[in-house]
Amino acid sequence: MAETVLNVSLRERLGKGGSRALRREALAPAVVYGKGMETCSLVVDPKALRQALATEAGLNALITLKGDGPFDGQVVILKDMQESPIRRDLLHADFQAIDLKEKILVMVPVQTIGTSVGEKEGGQLQVVRHELEVSCLPTAIPKVIEIDVTALNIGDVVHIEDIPIPEDVELLHDVNFTVLTVVAIMAEEEEVVEGEEEVVAEGVEGEEAAAETSEEE
Image (cartoon, rainbow, N blue to C red; front, side, top):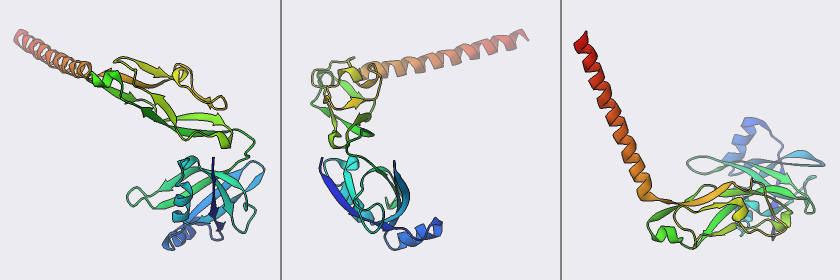
């Protein structure tokens, strides 16, 4: 996996006031932590960070920090990125320092390949999990976890044990964990209609019972 470089600096002014001052300068607060190192508060350029993440690895890109501080030359991975809900401005970033020779836990997106037989027959593909947690060396993180769905019929289910993965990657889920399935749309609609009919019938029965009780009184 290719590594990218990100220039950062130590953050001198902490607290909410310091964070607001950074954002007024189009910068954002960040932190880097990891085994064997002291946690450092940083200043990061949001544009530079997004550029560092603009690789095939996406959010799992390996980033080498550069700057005047104990973090210089440290390889990190982005663990969390908070953004404003409307403008999507970067509010805060968390980096985890990693050892390229030790396995880490990361979330990898699921990507389906092809169109299933069930979809062609009127069914619908439902992806239950869009990301899966894996354990592997930082240099072996998959870009995506591909699942070929072309042979799936309506009612078929793909579990963890059905997904082919490289030998050096481990999926951290139970083998019978459901990842995706193909369902019959008509069956779902019929269940909804039947459910509505049952509710109406119960309402009618309730009204009739209430009427009978009133007459008896």
